[in-house]
Image 1 (spheres, helix red, strand yellow):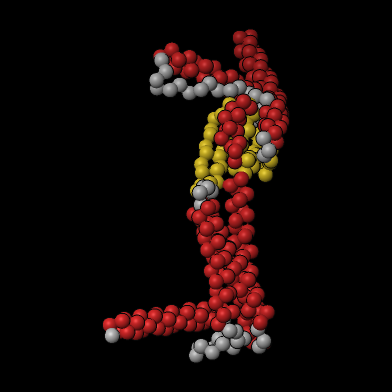
Image 2 (tube, one colour):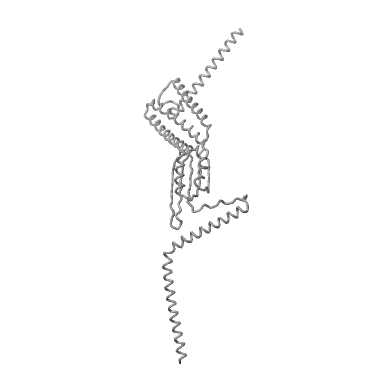
Length: 321
């Protein structure tokens, strides 16, 4: 008697479990169909009818793709995505040599010129030249290039920064993969759609998905370019003499005296040069003005002599009387 009760109890438990599993499977399929099919609010599918086994199969396929994407994302997050950029200002005595050697160096390390601007000297500025370059340098050579640039002139300014876009990069990449999975699903629905209304709805959504895919793809390509090739701006200024380095507080008394003396000599030399240049520029104006002043002086002097002679003559006439 006890054995029979035990058997019937086991049968009852198994039956209840089977019913529960069946209900869960039915609810899963219904939820999937409601999410991915275009239907009326009452839940009746309009595009096509499919058996439960086919729906479950496609659900497992999409779930497998999403799991694969998640695993791939987890593997990729191990590497950081950092955009490096910097600026270096150089002073040089030989502009042409520095410009040529710098361009050759950038090319030798696999970089290239993105933008360049060269300005020649104007009258009154001693013919000095300057240039602005924007170089793109492989990220593996970026730090070393900041050191090597010191060989091409005197560095008066050096700046460097890095922007971490790791989180944004992988978030965008995950969104892109999700959109591609959605695109495949919409293509599958489109191939089985029969009503024109449903076809138009699916095609419209496909266009929106395609636009988003192109947008995310462009963003990733831009980041890839900025990450793989760092941006370095280099300004070259031609000078007639390199100014001595400003002494630091820890330098001794004689170092500061020497710096002040050298700086004064440089300032005096620059003043004399500027004076000569300004004088040369003013000569076309000074010569006519000088000639006019000379003629006026001669005229006044002649009048003065005439008056003096007249005054002397009058005095002599008075004496004779």
